[in-house]
Image (cartoon, rainbow, N blue to C red; front, side, top):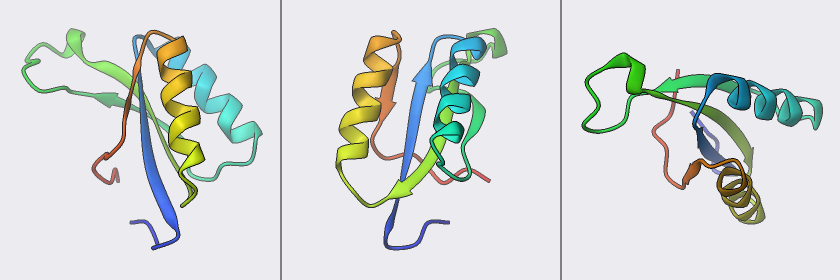
Length: 87
């Protein structure tokens, strides 16, 4: 659960290696609670079709959303601006 001053982000990427690299970089920058998750997207029944994602919480600054959306696009992924809280 986030506090009012936090924002959740989900950066969806095409493969596990890329997601783990992004997560490592974000952790090295000092973001707490960064984790790689397997993302089952709507309409995907086969687990082989699930994508990998990096879940991260940040202070409520909207510039993080812009940064993460650009990062996802650069890595052939996409950015979810409103992810559901992950356990």
